[in-house]
Length: 356
Ligand SMILES: *[C@@H]1O[C@H](CO)[C@@H](O)[C@H](O)[C@H]1NC(C)=O
Ligand SMILES: *[C@@H]1O[C@H](CO)[C@@H](O)[C@H](O)[C@H]1NC(C)=O
Ligand SMILES: *[C@@H]1O[C@H](CO)[C@@H](O)[C@H](O)[C@H]1NC(C)=O
Ligand SMILES: *[C@@H]1O[C@H](CO)[C@@H](O)[C@H](O)[C@H]1NC(C)=O
Image (tube, rainbow, N blue to C red):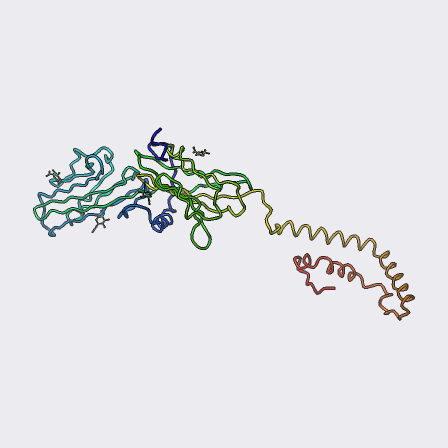
């Protein structure tokens, strides 16, 4: 329980699915974000193979009988792990740490050319760390070191549907491996233009919200009690329509870096733009109704118009225009009304607004 207090991660729980093809983007994001700690020289995707390059001095055509290639994984605490060893023209499996059993390979042809690169298959989160390549021979002794970082990425297939004004919890699973250090968690929202918005960040066991975007102020919450279960979910309160979009969570426990990308859609808000289909249907229905009414009461309307004109003439004593008395040509009457009442409808239906 003590370990939970600081939002630590000290259990292995929960499987995280992985999506490839998305790795480039995330690798770039991680690089841009400037993840804390030493810059790893090699980044591997979880579950994939990685080659750690190591070359040594040799003379072409000269066989090195005392060539000794030793790959080790350096542990900050405890002894280094033997990853792979080669001596006397062959691999020596004795003493290899069991975490690497069946997963390492040196290229015999490469060795003849001074290449002691190690192929490590099916990378695991536990493989993250420093690697050392020692080479000794009759000619020279050399050593090189690398740090290997392991990325685990996932894209959620279906969007998360949030209700306007309600709270929503966005899930972010990750894997915890023998960790006693506080976690670092960052939640971001992707922006079509400009940098991502910082939704929430958590460093060294604390919420760190100085750089949080104002749109998310006082609306976000992490659940540190869930971190040991590999759950870095975020609760977003009082969802707004602007919250729609893509969110990414980055989790950095002591080992591995996890990212989950997800889409959030907001339901329950009326959009500013009415749906075009709906708009067309209403326009069409209105026009048809008017057309029917006008057609049905045409004679009555004409009679009324004639009566009104005569009355006007008597009142004003002016000579009426001849065409006022004549019935207008069929079709022109309704169109005039339509134009007057629903210019935008007509425009949408492709009728020029000047039509009378
Ligand atoms: C090869 O080198 C490693 C590291 O220097 C050493 O521990 C090991 O004993 C050497 N192996 C042989 C057979 O000399
Ligand atoms: C050494 O071999 C590995 C594969 O076995 C290859 O990826 C790498 O480029 C080689 N390095 C050099 C310097 O030839
Ligand atoms: C993670 O924690 C949140 C909030 O406590 C919870 O709603 C969610 O179901 C949890 N997810 C998993 C996969 O356990
Ligand atoms: C979290 O971030 C802090 C500050 O950048 C850094 O000192 C710490 O090592 C990080 N922790 C992990 C587990 O990466």
